[in-house]
Length: 164
Image (spheres, rainbow, N blue to C red):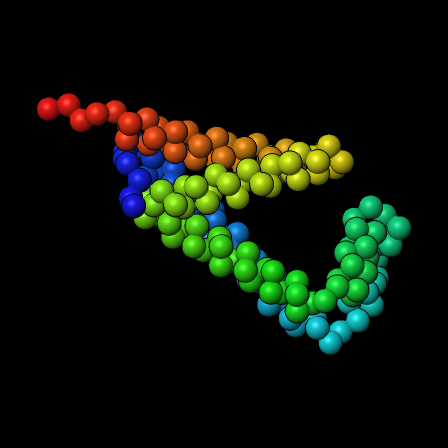
């Protein structure tokens, strides 16, 4: 079912959100390919070599984050992480396609999937406050709000009887 058109500007907003979802899908696919290339390497040693190459202190905040993530990746099942990243990318591509083509199901997907991330983003913002984390939280909040508003408006328009 195609979504009801509310305003001509809405298609521009939907297209922008669809492109954003596509970029997130591309980023996830790129990350999964990068992970695949690391499958037979000592990731922790690579992280230490990178830190040493740039003459960074391994105990400083960002190098420590890199080492912690490398330790996590070393212990993780890379194939499972890659499978999750690919599934995430497919969902983002499908959502982007649906939003680009003004599909109601895609608006539901965007609203629900965005809403699922909000508590995680709020907790992350509390734990690691930064301008970037705040911007991501606000941006995703407004996407969820926009999609919920469109869905609410469509429901109200469908409930109105046609006047002749």
